[in-house]
Structure formats: C-alpha cells, structure tokens
Picture 1 (cartoon, one colour):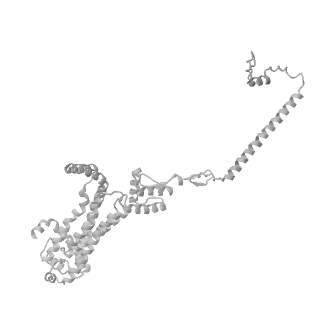
Picture 2 (spheres, helix red, strand yellow):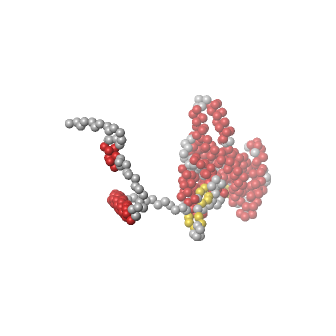
Picture 3 (cartoon, rainbow, N blue to C red):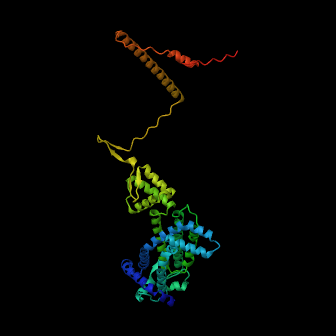
Length: 436
C-alpha cells in the first residue's frame, strides 16, 4: 500500500493540503474534531474539483452530441464493412477526423476526476491505519480519527470487523447502517442522472446502437457503485455521493437550458421560450439568442419542434433574425398615415359570402331584366334621334339641299338577289330544274 501511495504522492499531497485548509476554516465554526468540520472539508474539495472541471464538462456535452449526430453514418460504415474489421476501424477514424470529434471526449470529466478520487482514498486509508500522509501530521491524524458522521468514523468501511470499528470509537451497527444508506443514495443518484439523460435529452428520431449502450450503462453503473461501495471508507462515500449530486444538478441545468435538438427537453424549452419571447417581444439572454440563431441557421433542416417554434413566432407577428434576435414582422408593422392615425398591418381581403341557389337565380333574372330594359331604352333613344333628324331635314329649304345622287339599282334588290343565289351583274346562272 505504501508503494501505491508513493505513486500517487504527486496528487495526494495537494489533496491533503486542500482538505487541511478547509478544515481550518470549518474547525473554527463546528470544532476541529467534529464530523461536520471534516465532512464539509471533503464536500468543499469535491465542489472545488468540479468547478475546475466545468470546461471539460462542456466539452463532454459537445462531444456526446457530436457522437449522436454521427451515429447514422457510423451505422452505415458498420453495415458496409461488417466483414472487414480493419477497414471498418479505418473508416471510423476517418469519420472522426473529418467531423472533428473524439470518442474519448465524453469520458474526460471521469478521467480527470480519477486521480483526485484515488488520492482521497489513500488519504482516508492513512487515517484508518493511523499513518500520516501528505500534509496531515499527527495532530490532524488524531483529530480525523475522532471525527464521526452520524456515528460512523470517516475511515470506517462496511466490510470492517467489530474490533477495527471499536478501535475507531464506534459500533458496527452504526457503521453499516450509515454506509448502506450512503451506498443506496449514491447508486440512486447515479441511476437518476443517467435516466434523465436517456428519457429527456436524447434525440428520439435517431435509433442507434449508441442509445442502447447508454441504456445499458444506466443499469450497470448503479450496480458497480453498490458493489465497490462496500469497500469504500465513509469519507470516500461522502466524496462520491457529493460528486453524484453535483453531476445530477449540473445535468438538470444543462437539459433545461441547452437541450439536445430533437429531444423532449428541447420541446419543453422551446415552448417556454415561445411564451417568453411573445410576451416580451425579444430575446433577453445570450443563451436564448444562441438557440434562436442556431434554429434560423438550420433552414429547412429544422426538426418538428423548431418548426413549431418558428410558426408560433410568425402567428404572433414576430420574425427570428439570423443574429438570434427577434423583430416585428410585416403583419405587425406600424404605418403612420398622413392624418396622423397609426394603423397596424394591411387591410385583410374580404371574401364574398356564398349565395344560395334562389339568390343566384333571382340575381340572373334581375340582370336579364336590366339588360332588356337597357336595350329598350337604347332603341327608344335611337328612334327619337331619327325623328329629330328627319324633322330638322324637313325644315331646311328645298334649294339648299344638294343634288342627291341616284342610288344604284343594286341596293336592297341586289342584296336580296345575292342572298337568293343570283349574281349582281353579267349572265345569270341557270336555275336547276326542280325535282318533282
């Protein structure tokens, strides 16, 4: 064990120093030998580590979403080269390189957190065995051995015997009850964290092997925590329970404010965003502008939730801009008229009401009557005009009339002859004998 501790000495010393610094602060409030002082020191260590790992957590989210996007292409490669594993691996690496993704990025927070976990384990194991480690000297060691959390010493385990537990100043029943409760809470928090990821923040339109793997991990991880938890000291269980609760809360925040496209969480988020934007008429936060900008940039590639969001804005007279802001559309544009009256929107086109069959027939009859009366009026006015013209001509003196030319003989008689089949001039066509 000393050999393993020496291998992790590069990290056990900083971890022990951080715990001692937090202990000096909490010891002044709760007392240096209390479980609250040492327990809160471990919790503060977890919070400090997780804050430092937030950039890696963001990178993990991006890597996980990129992997979800690549799942259809990966499935095609697996089906195409299912008999050639080497070619399949080459095509997979080529796909990762072209898309700029790395499968190991989703494991970065766990990998980065592992050294701190092993360092804390060796620090607490040194307290249990009564050996100094890192910056923890004899006085701090004795203070830590006296600290109990709900009756269980920090260095006690579920598998410890009664003699070892009594040496730490506790009873075996208290140790096993406390460790069992903490193991159950640790496994339950891990299960809920994975479950909310699978049920709320996964694109339901894509069915890939990656989703099946995530579902399997949802049940495997809690079992692993339960199996290994019985060999962890109480202080390590405090550490792991705290980091699980932090992960659960951090993931709930991400799912609520930055959900995966196509997931149920995105549908709920866009519904809230629609109410907020239509009420205020604008996007107020940077995260909202980022979401709207991404939706506008997709164009025709939007999913059903994003299309519903755009349609809801349009119905409210708003238009999403390319920079993530929201502006009033043409339907709600305010126009200032000459007399100073403002009008909103253009006048809508009024559709004619549908008439019944009786109304249409009465309309046709009325129109026909109007046309007949109009034609009679025209004929009457024409007759009056002819009468007036003849009277005017008769009133003129006879010598003032010019010599009228004699009308050709082919007037009305010629027209009647032409209609009867006879020529106007020249030899006439002989008539064909009538058939008796």
